[in-house]
Length: 63
Image (cartoon, rainbow, N blue to C red; front, top):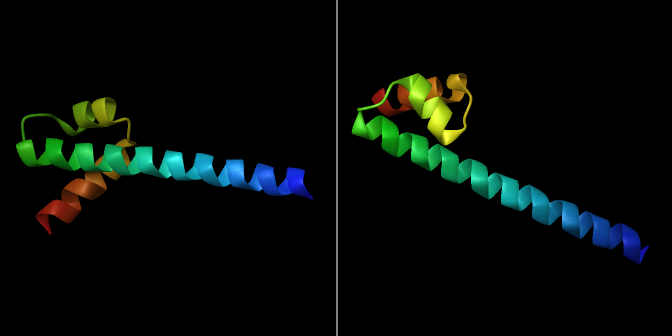
């Protein structure tokens, strides 16, 4: 039982780290969009987000 609990804890920590990285990438993309100097494709490349997500962030920003 302890092994299962430890595995669950590790998995939860890994998911938390991934979510934190994703949130930072989103924040970075938002700052790039606000700057207005880069194309959506460059923001996709630099932030490591899918182009669809970058487009969604842009739409949210202008809405």
